[in-house]
Length: 115
Ligand SMILES: [Zn+2]
Image (tube, rainbow, N blue to C red; front, side):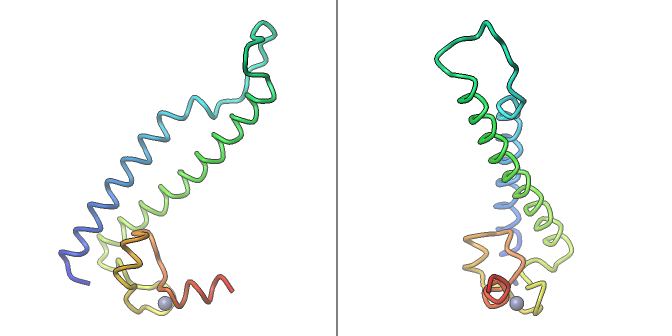
């Protein structure tokens, strides 16, 4: 892969990372366990509150996993092995990386893995 392309993906990854960190920070409050407050009989029932907390927790876990993939991809751009399939060591299609800059496998290997 051309170094200009790597730089472009790096910028994309850094942007993605900052976005994820920002979202994780602002949603941290929603993922805290629901406090049982007998006085708080409001519009949102306790069950609703717990469901919302569960959903917030799931999306925050998903973001954390994504953040780890982004960090790993950034490391690969430094080690110059970015865009190379971890399985067959062929170049990953640039279009695939444009859709998912954290992809570690080429289409063929990713498909073989999901079978
Ligand atoms: Zn491959």
